[in-house]
Length: 203
Image (cartoon, rainbow, N blue to C red; front, side, top):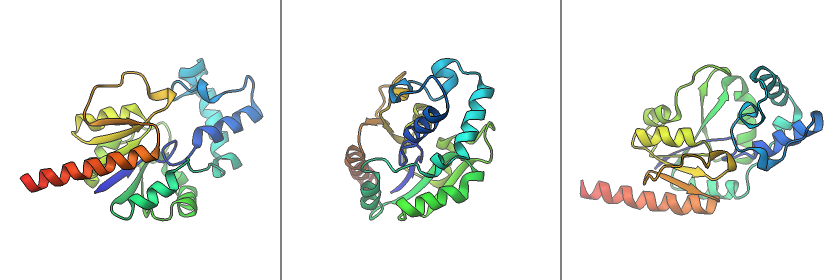
């Protein structure tokens, strides 16, 4: 199968690194459980201009380059890449391509293809569902419920890693699987593969 995988907070523990950066520079401090939404504007009403400034500072800091891979992700990708084509589909702007490829090569060298859905921040990018359709990916693994919804509309399966920021409006859909670990992801990928093989055999 061809599997599209998000990068930040799917393969990389980006929120933890951002919290470390933020708490070193700003008050009041943030905790992981504060992230019940995707942006500081949604979490605590921070003006978007201020948030954009802080995000730019983080992106240009050493904390950005010191983001660690998520627990189990390295071994899971090693296992999945033996049978499947893994393609990173990230919402990071293209200007971070070099730094992103260095990170991928360091921790996840099995992944050769990385697609950036936008050139710069604040532009309206392609949806990840559109990208999955273009590359014929059967599954998207992500932490963003919006991307899971978009894939559902396109008839594409998605695996949603459970976080405080994606627990609202969870649909009762056979195309969206919520998981808490990469071990669960591997199990679901194997189930989807069997299902697709049955479909191909019967068609």
